[in-house]
Length: 394
Image 1 (cartoon, rainbow, N blue to C red):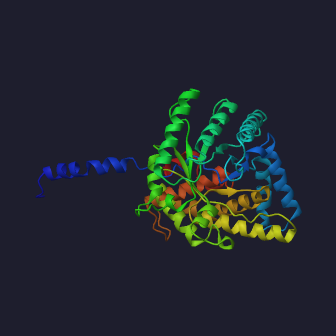
Image 2: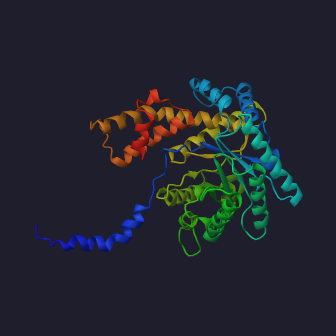
Image 3: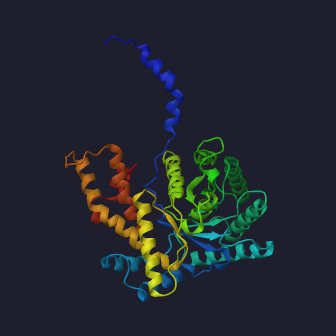
């Protein structure tokens, strides 16, 4: 060996700042449950029995409009999910779904929705995840957004379990910084722990993806949250319209939407931030033919998102729940045998024709964990226990 010993120290000095930056990068926390969907309900329609009501409506749609666009062996599992936990993540909507109303009307809706959530929690009918989508922080709606969030927290007696705020129509990192500062002030006002309040950034305008100077704005949005970013949510129709896509062609699978989501995915990958796909506005309503066509579309779009690494999406109607869970369950059940076999072969250092690497090991374990979290899989079916999978997914 002829290299002087100080060469090592020189490299360490040169790369110290980079080491520190890379040390802060985090993979998505797949060991922590991510809901498979977010259900948006206007604030004035939130009732204490909303969750069982949506479950009953979804089961009625299943009963009335069979056959379904999925394998019949999934039916019992889907029916069980709809009876047990039809909504994983509920978002009380004060933005587009609620519209612009006078201050008294919005105040009343906020308080009523908050009281309904408290009652649902007392009755054991709460969702695992819940939140409120306020209006955006642009000048015209800023004060209304802050007032509604403050009123909601006050009426709930503080944030409910699994609480998150959705910040829509973000177009500049300064808006995210302001939201983080607002959360800190609310924590002080309500006696909460530091960083108890987190929020999702909704990507609905082109400037949130690509800035006028050509930079990827979405990466700056995540950084501007100062660790409070709970997710990046894509707004299919606002974004498509802003890109000039005509109404009949606006879709989760339009190339403009795919580009935006790919940028979001890359920006979030090193920050440990989950990404959520948008929704389809084709609802399963009307006669059997119309419902089945909407189900077929929804099933295909959910599966498409899952295959592209978007494990969460929006649902807007009770009759979308059967296909949300059926498509999700089918995705994980189809892939589980191969994922479990490959993970076991990797751990046992056996070659079975696929050369998997450490990163793939994490992805395989994460896939199985996600399937377990939503109820598609059982531990017995994977051949691993929870601790093993969490360790390998980390």
